[in-house]
Image 1 (spheres, rainbow, N blue to C red):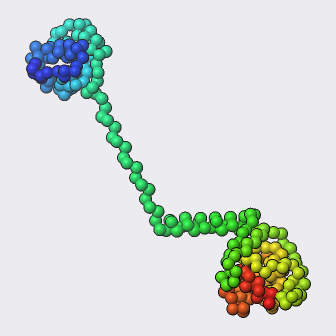
Image 2 (image 1 turned 60 degrees about the vertical axis):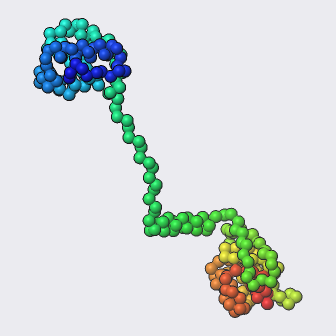
Image 3 (image 1 turned 90 degrees about the horizontal axis):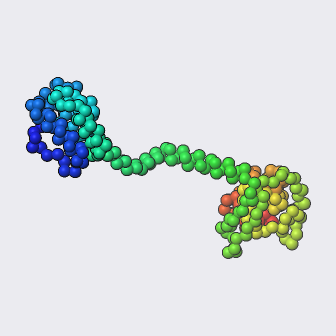
Length: 250
């Protein structure tokens, strides 16, 4: 390194004094950087960084240079200690950490996985619907009803089994089992109560077995309602509405 190469302008004066002294010792000895690398435990590149004030030289390297050039070590080490306290390791800062990669959007689920998820969700919903003890509210339209209003009837979703007795009679031109006078309520699968038992009695009167007269709209009752609707020329949707009641009460 030649004498003419300037040190960084922002270098602290105490550090500058040490580095200039080391450079002068090196130049006065006539040693090149390559020779310093061969005659000391430190490489030529290390000496180049230290003498260029790019990194701060260790105490041991200063001692080695003092012995090699015949310089009084105590004075040189005193300069090193003062410079060490003032050193700002601007050239020794670690490289900035790379910017975090932008978050990647989650891959779209495959059609098979999406189908499995949908099936699982549907199964859970079905179990909840079957085991729920809340009230089921059926608001179903009878597509062939003459009225524009929709009746709504609420029955317990789960009810203890009960046996009803049918006492079918003809009253005012209509059949009745004496359990309910309902004519407009809309009842569907899963409903329960006296009105279902009434419909079951009237289905039995019509010669269509709904199973037991238990007041529960189950599979056998559903099948019987559809059979009656087909016989009466109604849509066989399995829902008891005004026109189905009319067919039951004849």
